[in-house]
Image (tube, rainbow, N blue to C red):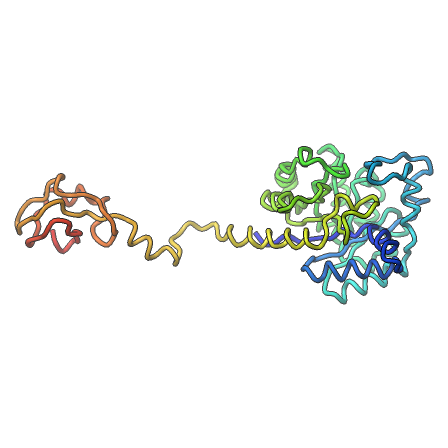
Amino acid sequence: MNKPYVIAEMGVNFYDTAREMRISALDAAKLYIDKAAEIGIDCAKFQSYKAGTIVSKNSPAYWDTTKEPTKTQYELFLKHDKFGEKEYRELCEYTHSKGMDFTSTPFDYTSADYLEDMVDFYKISSSDLSNIPFIKHIGRKGKAVYISVGAAYLSEVDVAVRALKEVGCKDIVVFHCVLSYPTDPANANLRVIETLKKDFPDVRVGFSDHVAPDDTMMTLATAYLLGAEVIEKHFTLDKTLPGNDHYHAGDPEDFKKAITNFKWIDTVLGSAEKTVFACETIPRREARRSLVLTRNMKAGEIIKEKDLMPKRPGTGISPAYAEIVIGRKVVKDLEEDTILTWEMV
């Protein structure tokens, strides 16, 4: 395994940071990119939409309204739809200048089209999993497509993946995702990662996380151990800020812990080859056992079973050959506790 590809989902959290810090939304977005780059994140991801094209005006909230009190989806999206092609192009160039990949989830055809020469890959939201015409439109563009499959049956995942393949998309990542903000750990069901890997062996599998960060970032570590090749999580600079995504997002310290975990996992997983490692050479010799005499013996005496005891170190005849040694003669006088070698018998 290699360290997973890590995506920081900036989403729209930077709008709240901009308001808190009294800076422009664009400057706040760049600050988010700076912090992500500092800790080794691979990709900065945003969201591209206009409230009027993503949701009808009376769509009710489906998030935790004690954390984000906005009552309709339209009102919420209206707060965060100020950026267009110009702003995303500037963010794309800024992200690339920091050595990271850039993407933004399009939520309408206009966004999908203007993002085409910016994004390093397309990300499709769980909410568009059944929007097959839109999926095909994106799939035709010849770029990798990463797609979340929250709140979906396996059959719906299959339809979406087939739709991408039908239009020639060859690089697909399917994200296990639970469409609940925040996701209760009991509902994370990370074993779905294994299911997706088994049922879709010709695509990559990732994990888009909405579980609130724990002290050890164990959720992401577990997802990686189960085979997630790509990890996506919402990113914030302040988890205490009011807003739709801060309360289940990870801050820079959380992401730093997660990346440290991934590297540690890679270190301890090592190689699948079962062999004797260089670090084991001396312990192997000193901790294994040899056949050792239980009494003084004279040259010519026949070795009996009671004359032998397996003891450390393993520098003499292995106990595995005891049946061959029993019944043979010692060729010289030997003292009790002598480690037998083949030259002695």
